[in-house]
Image 1 (tube, rainbow, N blue to C red):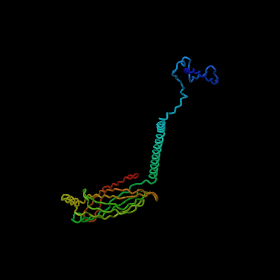
Image 2 (cartoon, helix red, strand yellow):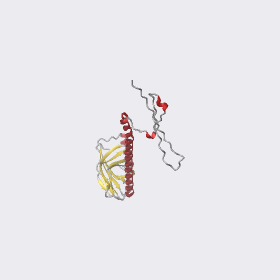
Image 3 (cartoon, rainbow, N blue to C red):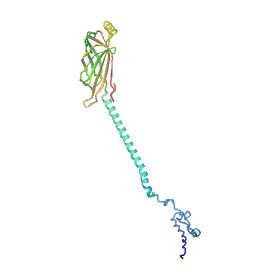
Length: 274
C-alpha cells in the first residue's frame, strides 16, 4: 500500500534588502508575498491565502470581458472628437459672422447710402367720372442728391397705382432707368383706369364736392425693384422699394396741380434700412 505524502512546508521568502539611504534609521519594509508556518502546513487539504501588493496586480480584463472593455475604453475618445468638431464648427461660423459684420460696417462707413426722395409734381386726369376707363398721367420727381457715391438702378417690373379713399382708380408701370449719384430725374408714367369703376353715389357726390372746392385727396403708391450701385464695383441684390405719396389735386378733369402732403419710402434689405 502506498504511503500518504503530505505537502512540505513552504519556506518563508527572504525580505529584499532596503536600498541605502541617507537616514539609516528609516528603513522601508517589504511585505512577503507568501507566509507559511509549520502549523498551517501540517493539515492536509488546507487552503492558503496569498497577499499580493496592489502595485503588483496586473489590471488586464479576462478574455470574456476584453471586447466590452475595448468598447468602453474607446467611448471617451469618440466623445472628445465629436466635442472638438462641434467647437471647431461653432468657432468657424462665429468668425464668418464677425468678418461679414466688419465688411458691412466698413462699406456703410465708406459709402453712407441714403434713400432717394420722391415727389409727385403733376397729375393729368381724364374721364374719372365717366363710364369709360379713366386715364391719368403722373409725373414723379426722383431725387438722389443725398448720395455722393451711390447710384440707384431701377429695374423693370415696377408698378404705380393711384387710389381715392381706398378705391383703385388707375395703374401703370414704372420705367427701368439708372439714376447716378447727385442726380434728379423727372419720370412721366401713363396710367390706365379699370373698367367699371366701383364708386357709389355718395362717393361720386363727395368727389364732385371736393373737386368744386379744389382739394381732391389722392394716394399714389409705387413698388419698384431697385439695385444699388456702390461705386463702380459693388452692387447689391435686387430689393423692392415701396413709396407712398399723399397728394391733393385741384381738379379731376384735365391738367392738375398736385400739392404733396408727404411721401414715405420703405425698404428693408439686410444692411440698407430705409
